Image (cartoon, rainbow, N blue to C red; front, side, top):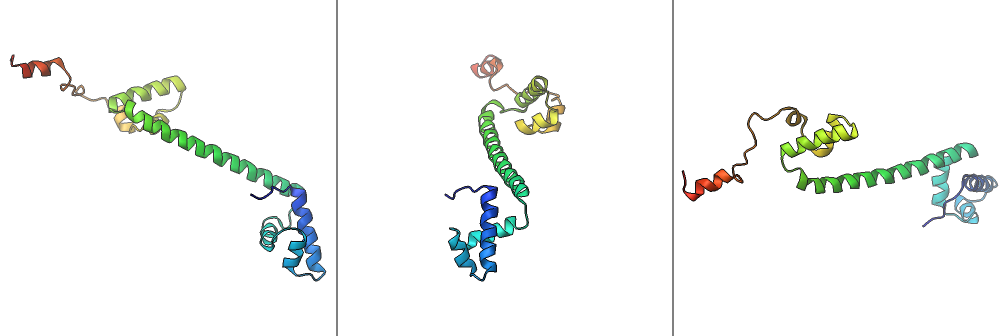
Length: 151
């Protein structure tokens, strides 16, 4: 893994290599004399040419923040995927999802739209109350009476 360089080191190396190239040395030899490859020199020159030391520090800070935010985003996406896998067991019916959406909006103060998106409930299913109760006749006691022969 490569060593992280400071803004001062990058600017100093680029300026020293530019001076060596200006004196007539070949680019590859000048880069090697600064303990870097020719490709690294070209990459740094493309990225940082014309920047002052403060500007380079600002760019490097932005790059570090961007990398940190990307890591956090990937962790949050992974957490959401884990949550969705676990919630498949809890949120098997639209009625269960409807109850959870109402609970999340009341407890956390998030919008109904956001809660529906996270819990996998379509908003029209959330808003429309079913006309008939859910068909739970498979588990009811009446079902056992029908099969026992008392009708």
